[in-house]
Image (cartoon, rainbow, N blue to C red):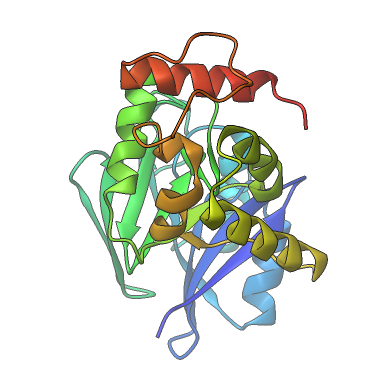
Length: 257
């Protein structure tokens, strides 16, 4: 049985740890810094077997080199991107990542938009999606186009509804404020917001969410079903779904709660 733990890091990042307590091994996803990982491994008497990286931003790879000094036998999997210097294997669309310790298997999905080489890892009823899909939101488009980002979100939304969504930041309540302006009558959004607020008040992460949660409440996965033009948009609500998504993302870029 594999246990899944989000490790808080930096200002609002999560480093994900998937561990086999019986076997005493763990894999780590997107280590933006090293100390939370070393502390978690030590506290749980775990050995690091693998590191999965989703994209090149420093807050997702900054601790990888130091972790390899701590665990030189660990294998690093990363997208095909020279901006990630520490990688034993470069992976892309359709590749499979088979990890022996802990035993786990993932399919690689290319999900460009936030960055041009962003990937996600889907397996073990989990998707490690980095900064492409957030709970109740999505990543900024630093290198990609609206069409690319929407296509990537469509791919993630098509995963089985019970898939656990493991993204890279604790943005849920901030995203909820925007989502309520977009779809104020959405009861699933009200329920998810209340749940997230209670978790944060208890000092707990709002993640993982699920694909079902996001389909029901995340406005960026709902461009085809939103009932009317959100009042906060600066441009007309287009009939073209890519233009609708682009308008939503542009509005989120300047939104202040």
